[in-house]
Image (cartoon, rainbow, N blue to C red; front, top):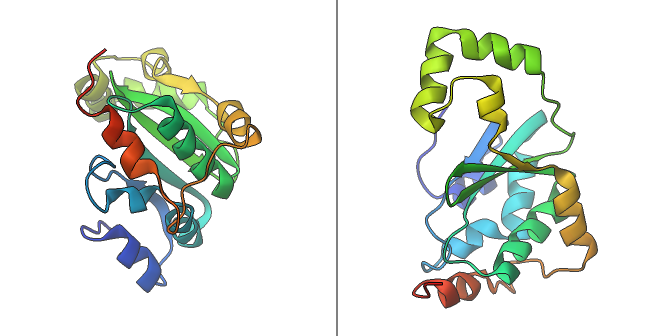
Length: 175
C-alpha cells in the first residue's frame, strides 16, 4: 500500500503496520523537511514497522557538510539497532535501518537477478547485471553508524534540529 502525503501525519495517525517504510523527502535545507530526519520521526516509523521491518532513509550526499551527515547517522542510529549504508546514485545515500541486522543471501540474489524482470530493473537502476554489481553499491555496515553514535554526535530532535542549517550552509558552495 502506497501513501503519498505528509509522512509524519500518516505515521502518527494510523494503527497500520508495514514491512517497509521508505522516506525520500526533499532536500533537508528546504523549510520543514528537516523534521523528516528527527529522532521523533524515526520513533514514529519504528512503531509502525512489523517485526523484521525495514526503514529506508534517502539522504543527499551532495551540498552537505560532515557534521550534518554525522547528525543523520547518529539520529537514525539512536532509534534503530542496525543501519547499513548504500550508494544509490553518485551522490545519493540510502540508509537501511532495522532492529535486526540484514543478512545478504548471495545465492538468492544471483537467482533473482538472473530472472528477466529483476535483471532488467537492476540494469535500469544501476547499469549492473549481477549480484556482485548490486553489492558494489554497499558502502558500510552498521559499524559506521555505531562509531558515529559512540562519538557522541548531535541527535536531531523536534526541539533541536540544526540539520536544516547544516544542509543550507553547503548549498551554494562548490569545492
